[in-house]
Length: 316
Ligand code: NAD
Ligand code: UGA
Image (cartoon, rainbow, N blue to C red):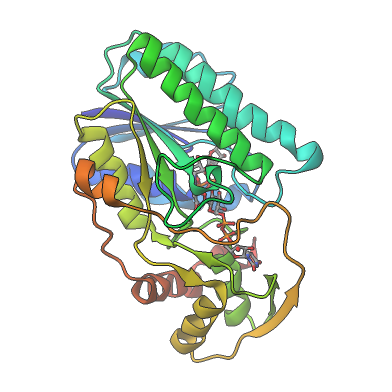
């Protein structure tokens, strides 16, 4: 099997490519090293991959590369490249979100249409739900509350259009706050762990009683590969970690793991942040036989161990 992974130098894309290679697939990865966070971190993410004979990499922008040959050569397309980050998506930054989340997805789908691909997996996000009843079900009314969420919803809708009109074998996964080694440096758990290890202050947005359904990255990868291999087409599927935890609770667990006291400062809630997320994963169980395996404490131990050893922890 041969796959193209976009956003391969990113957090989830690099883990996905490693997971596919372990299964014996050939993987081509594309990434443009956007400057949302440091290039050095993204190059480190690629380090394991570059030593694998089954892997090839192209640096380039998905809006500029020709892509014809890349798409003709593969059986599976995993589209993970995006401009992530909920809180930075306001104002002038929105143009990057439109470009990298909407226009890029449309171009990729346009180029892929009509090709004999087995599956096109699109990475979407819990942020499409906004203020939605819990647990979040795929057919809930969607009211994103961040510009980022709006662009991810638009990219989902584009995926569905190409499924409906061109029979593109699209499947859409709504990931819920993913964590683990190589987690993006702007994300809460990465910031919290780094601050605790370096005796720095942690900033909590709001009172810390907001909740997240944190999903460990190996569970996310397993679900993504299962989605590529499943029969279903045109479906949207939540991929959550199976538990709802407050931000304050994550800090308590991190203090226990590191045996250090966190220095915490509470500031105002940030615009665009959802108060609570919690995925109904019954559809993922039914269609993908998905069952998250890594519990929060165990996953946090792994992320702490990674950040304690990584050389890049100070370059974020
Ligand atoms: P990431 O920023 O680590 O990875 C995304 C990669 O895409 C980056 O390396 C970036 O350089 C690349 N990229 C962006 N625009 C590009 C372009 N035009 N051409 C080529 N490469 C480009 O982000 P991540 O956290 O790994 O997220 C991966 C996907 O999962 C994204 O689609 C994101 O929206 C989605 N998602 C992530 C989470 C999470 O918790 N991390 C949750 C929900 C959804
Ligand atoms: C994350 C990713 O960043 C998005 O790309 C993704 O689409 C989204 O998950 C998703 O699941 O769809 P978010 O849940 O905001 O978004 O992830 P974190 O940055 O890890 O934040 C988690 C919580 O911690 C939020 O409530 C946030 O307000 C809080 N937080 C974050 C802090 O209190 N302090 C910080 O320094 C960072």
